[in-house]
Structures are given as C-alpha cells and as structure tokens.
Amino acid sequence: MLAPVPRRHALLRIAAALALPAVLGACSLGSPSGPGARRIAYGEHPSQFGELTLPAGTPRGVAVVVHGGFWRQARGLELGRPLAADLADAGLAAWNVEYRRVGGDGGWPATFEDVATAVDLLAGPVQEAAGGRLPLDRVVAVGHSAGGHLGTWLAARPGLPEGAPGAGPAVRLRGVVSQAGVLDLVDAEQRGVGSGAASDLLGGGPDELPDRYALASPIARLPLGVPVVCVHGTADANVPIRQSERFVAAAGDAAELVTLPGADHFAVIDPDTEAWRACRDGVERLLA
Image 1 (cartoon, rainbow, N blue to C red):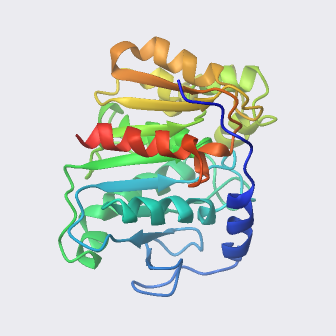
Image 2 (cartoon, helix red, strand yellow; image 1 turned 90 degrees about the horizontal axis):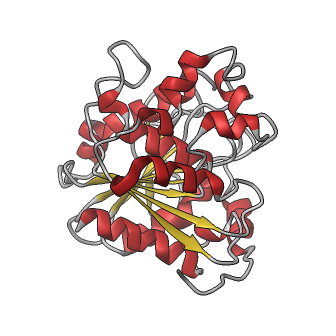
Image 3 (tube, one colour; image 1 turned 180 degrees about the horizontal axis):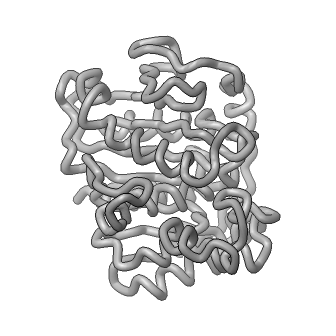
C-alpha cells in the first residue's frame, strides 16, 4: 500500500503538447518522432507504427508501452511518450506502440492484430534499429486502461487457438504491468465502463458475441503462463479497481494487486507520481 497520490495534470499538458495529428502517415525507419525516439512503421495505415526509445547503454530489457483511451481514436501514443522516456532512463528499451482504434479503422480484429504485429516486429526491424541489442527473452508490457487490457492480452497470445487474431506469437512476453487495466470485458460492458467501450471494440455485447469476448478478455484467457502486476488507484472513476481485483482473484498467485490509496485514473501515467514509480517497480520485479 502506498501513500495517497495527489491528482496530477502535468502529463495531460505534456500529451497535448506532443500530440501527433491523426492524419500523419506511417513513416519509414528513422523518421522524426518523439524526443529521442525512432519511428518505425509496421503497416501502411497511419496508425500502424511505433516509437523506439533506447537507453544510453545496452538495454537490460524491453518495455512495450501500450496507451489507453478506451480503444478509441481520440487518444494516441503521445500518452506513452513520457513513460517511454523514463523507462529508457532506467536502462530499458521502450517500444511505444500505436494501433488502429475504434473510429479509425480499428475494433475487432484490427486493433488486436495491430498490437500483436507491433510486438512481433521486435524480432525484425525494431531489433535491427537497436543494433541487435534487444534481449527478446526479457520483454514486458506496460499498458494503461485499454492499453492494460491489450498488454495483458498480448501475454495471453501463446494460449490462443490456431487461426485466432494474435495466435502464434514470434515474441513472447515475460510479464505485464497493467495500469488500471480493463481486464474483464464482460464485466466492463455489463457495468458501463467507458460507456460501451467494450462493445464498440468487439462489435457487440457479450450475449451477442460470446466467442469474441472469450478470445479478447484477459480474464477469460487465464492462466496466461506469465505474471501480471495490476496497479490501480482506489479513486479511479474511469476504470473501477474492481476490474483489477476480479482479475487478480481469478489468476491467484500468477497476479499481484498494487493498490494506490487516493489515486485517480491518470496518476499511473504521470512520471512525477509515486503511482508511476509503483508501475516501474513492477517492471523491475518482472525482469528480476
């Protein structure tokens, strides 16, 4: 249990300053991007790219940063840039991924296919951009909100049935830090989390599309085979802490809940907060 975390808005100001226009096209390796980052495309759609930020020395691990925003077009990877910079300062390679979102050609299965492809790119062009220095046996995901869902789903890819979106990963995760993640899509839809965000993502509700929910919801993919650290504020009004509590209860010893008394939904993505430091400590434990 950590001390109460005050509400912070610095990150939102940073995100606004760094925001990329939605019309930006996918660029080639090495095109300008976030400060100190290299932009690498993994498809032709404007949202199919990531930003690689490398540490000063040899990376001791890789953090895949997955931004939130309820899978909708309004938010982008600019939210992950401050986290990627902080992780690189801590000696990790940070791969901050963008993906097609609802309202921008995303949803089922495009959003899932994109994040899976972006992670698998670590074994190809991203590794090449890093000079072959990425330790691909030490890859963890750090995802916020909808990104917590996607990051945890990425860890579940080895257990997906053949032919399902994301099955047969080229790169497997060592673990996940879920930052206020939406980890039970059925419960989220039934309780109105994100005002129907889960049904927007999957194209309908759990009664209409149970097979999609079974493939897409992290709690339905247990056991994942890797540990998950769920970091969640008690004052989160966007994604209730119930989401993390339910996942950890179902996962048992394979998951850990780090409760942040008084923290809201955005404290975990502000590098100046104790909430973010709890997330970074979770990454360190996964890499230990």
